[in-house]
Length: 161
Image (cartoon, rainbow, N blue to C red):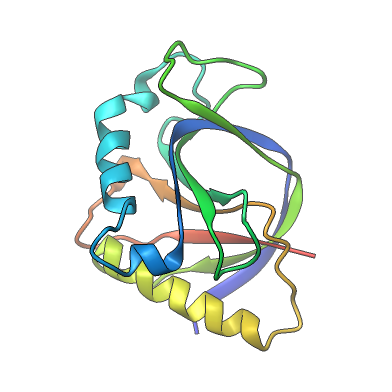
Protein backbone atom coordinates (compact mmCIF):
# COMPACT_ATOMS: atom_id res chain seq x y z
CA UNK A 1 0.00 0.00 0.00
CA UNK A 2 1.20 3.50 -0.82
CA UNK A 3 1.76 6.14 1.85
CA UNK A 4 -1.42 8.13 2.42
CA UNK A 5 -2.59 11.15 4.39
CA UNK A 6 -5.66 13.42 4.50
CA UNK A 7 -5.81 17.13 3.69
CA UNK A 8 -8.44 19.83 3.17
CA UNK A 9 -7.76 21.96 0.06
CA UNK A 10 -9.45 25.23 -0.92
CA UNK A 11 -11.14 25.80 -4.27
CA UNK A 12 -8.74 26.42 -7.15
CA UNK A 13 -8.89 27.11 -10.87
CA UNK A 14 -6.65 25.38 -13.40
CA UNK A 15 -5.83 26.41 -16.95
CA UNK A 16 -4.65 23.75 -19.34
CA UNK A 17 -5.29 21.40 -22.21
CA UNK A 18 -7.93 18.69 -22.02
CA UNK A 19 -9.51 15.54 -23.43
CA UNK A 20 -12.55 13.45 -22.63
CA UNK A 21 -11.74 9.75 -22.18
CA UNK A 22 -12.41 6.54 -20.24
CA UNK A 23 -10.16 4.09 -18.43
CA UNK A 24 -11.12 1.46 -21.01
CA UNK A 25 -9.94 3.73 -23.85
CA UNK A 26 -6.68 4.51 -22.05
CA UNK A 27 -5.86 0.81 -21.69
CA UNK A 28 -6.24 0.24 -25.44
CA UNK A 29 -4.34 1.38 -28.54
CA UNK A 30 -6.15 4.75 -28.73
CA UNK A 31 -4.85 6.12 -25.45
CA UNK A 32 -5.23 9.88 -25.48
CA UNK A 33 -3.39 10.79 -22.31
CA UNK A 34 0.08 10.42 -23.80
CA UNK A 35 -0.95 12.72 -26.68
CA UNK A 36 -2.44 15.16 -24.16
CA UNK A 37 0.88 15.30 -22.30
CA UNK A 38 2.64 16.05 -25.62
CA UNK A 39 0.16 18.88 -26.26
CA UNK A 40 0.76 20.22 -22.75
CA UNK A 41 4.55 20.29 -23.18
CA UNK A 42 4.18 22.10 -26.52
CA UNK A 43 1.83 24.73 -25.03
CA UNK A 44 4.26 26.53 -22.65
CA UNK A 45 1.46 27.13 -20.13
CA UNK A 46 3.95 27.31 -17.24
CA UNK A 47 5.63 30.31 -18.84
CA UNK A 48 2.41 32.31 -19.18
CA UNK A 49 1.58 35.33 -17.00
CA UNK A 50 -1.13 34.54 -14.45
CA UNK A 51 0.10 31.06 -13.60
CA UNK A 52 0.40 30.41 -9.86
CA UNK A 53 3.29 28.14 -8.79
CA UNK A 54 4.35 27.27 -12.36
CA UNK A 55 6.67 24.53 -11.03
CA UNK A 56 3.61 22.39 -10.16
CA UNK A 57 1.93 20.60 -13.05
CA UNK A 58 -1.59 19.32 -12.34
CA UNK A 59 -3.34 16.45 -14.08
CA UNK A 60 -6.98 16.94 -13.07
CA UNK A 61 -9.65 14.26 -13.49
CA UNK A 62 -13.08 15.93 -13.49
CA UNK A 63 -16.59 15.93 -14.96
CA UNK A 64 -17.00 12.25 -14.15
CA UNK A 65 -19.90 10.64 -15.97
CA UNK A 66 -20.43 8.25 -13.06
CA UNK A 67 -17.47 6.63 -11.32
CA UNK A 68 -14.11 5.11 -12.27
CA UNK A 69 -15.80 3.10 -15.05
CA UNK A 70 -17.41 6.05 -16.89
CA UNK A 71 -16.13 8.87 -19.06
CA UNK A 72 -14.24 11.78 -17.50
CA UNK A 73 -12.32 14.88 -18.55
CA UNK A 74 -8.58 15.25 -17.96
CA UNK A 75 -7.05 18.73 -17.77
CA UNK A 76 -3.25 19.03 -17.67
CA UNK A 77 -2.07 22.47 -16.69
CA UNK A 78 -1.44 24.90 -13.90
CA UNK A 79 -3.23 26.72 -11.15
CA UNK A 80 -4.04 30.31 -12.05
CA UNK A 81 -3.96 33.32 -9.73
CA UNK A 82 -7.48 34.11 -8.59
CA UNK A 83 -9.61 34.96 -11.61
CA UNK A 84 -6.63 35.45 -13.94
CA UNK A 85 -7.04 34.50 -17.55
CA UNK A 86 -4.03 33.36 -19.54
CA UNK A 87 -3.82 34.89 -23.01
CA UNK A 88 -4.15 31.64 -24.93
CA UNK A 89 -7.44 30.72 -26.60
CA UNK A 90 -6.46 27.04 -26.81
CA UNK A 91 -6.68 26.59 -23.05
CA UNK A 92 -9.61 25.36 -21.00
CA UNK A 93 -10.37 26.43 -17.44
CA UNK A 94 -11.50 24.00 -14.80
CA UNK A 95 -12.73 24.77 -11.30
CA UNK A 96 -11.75 22.36 -8.54
CA UNK A 97 -14.12 22.69 -5.56
CA UNK A 98 -12.94 22.89 -1.98
CA UNK A 99 -12.72 19.35 -0.70
CA UNK A 100 -11.23 16.86 1.70
CA UNK A 101 -8.67 14.66 -0.05
CA UNK A 102 -7.00 11.37 0.62
CA UNK A 103 -3.50 11.79 -0.80
CA UNK A 104 -1.64 8.77 -2.18
CA UNK A 105 2.14 9.03 -2.72
CA UNK A 106 3.52 6.74 -5.40
CA UNK A 107 6.76 4.85 -5.11
CA UNK A 108 9.71 6.22 -7.08
CA UNK A 109 10.23 4.95 -10.61
CA UNK A 110 9.39 5.61 -14.27
CA UNK A 111 6.55 8.15 -14.25
CA UNK A 112 4.01 6.36 -16.45
CA UNK A 113 4.66 3.05 -14.68
CA UNK A 114 4.32 4.34 -11.10
CA UNK A 115 1.27 6.48 -11.87
CA UNK A 116 -0.56 3.65 -13.68
CA UNK A 117 0.27 1.23 -10.85
CA UNK A 118 -0.91 3.78 -8.26
CA UNK A 119 -4.31 4.18 -9.97
CA UNK A 120 -4.81 0.40 -9.97
CA UNK A 121 -4.10 0.39 -6.23
CA UNK A 122 -6.39 3.40 -5.65
CA UNK A 123 -9.31 1.77 -7.50
CA UNK A 124 -8.81 -1.43 -5.49
CA UNK A 125 -8.56 0.51 -2.21
CA UNK A 126 -11.87 2.33 -2.74
CA UNK A 127 -13.73 -0.88 -3.59
CA UNK A 128 -13.63 -1.86 0.09
CA UNK A 129 -12.73 1.28 2.04
CA UNK A 130 -14.61 3.30 4.63
CA UNK A 131 -13.77 6.48 2.68
CA UNK A 132 -16.13 7.34 -0.17
CA UNK A 133 -14.97 9.09 -3.34
CA UNK A 134 -16.96 12.15 -4.39
CA UNK A 135 -15.80 12.24 -8.04
CA UNK A 136 -15.78 16.06 -7.92
CA UNK A 137 -12.17 16.46 -9.01
CA UNK A 138 -9.12 14.27 -8.39
CA UNK A 139 -5.63 15.31 -9.40
CA UNK A 140 -1.99 14.36 -9.65
CA UNK A 141 0.74 16.90 -8.85
CA UNK A 142 4.09 16.80 -10.62
CA UNK A 143 6.95 18.99 -9.34
CA UNK A 144 8.84 20.13 -12.45
CA UNK A 145 11.79 21.60 -10.53
CA UNK A 146 13.57 18.26 -10.21
CA UNK A 147 11.45 16.13 -12.52
CA UNK A 148 13.14 12.96 -13.77
CA UNK A 149 10.70 10.88 -15.88
CA UNK A 150 12.78 7.74 -15.20
CA UNK A 151 12.72 8.16 -11.41
CA UNK A 152 9.89 10.27 -10.06
CA UNK A 153 7.36 10.28 -7.26
CA UNK A 154 3.84 11.71 -7.65
CA UNK A 155 1.11 12.69 -5.22
CA UNK A 156 -2.45 11.76 -6.22
CA UNK A 157 -5.29 13.62 -4.50
CA UNK A 158 -8.64 11.78 -4.35
CA UNK A 159 -11.67 13.84 -3.26
CA UNK A 160 -13.62 12.11 -0.49
CA UNK A 161 -16.71 12.78 1.62
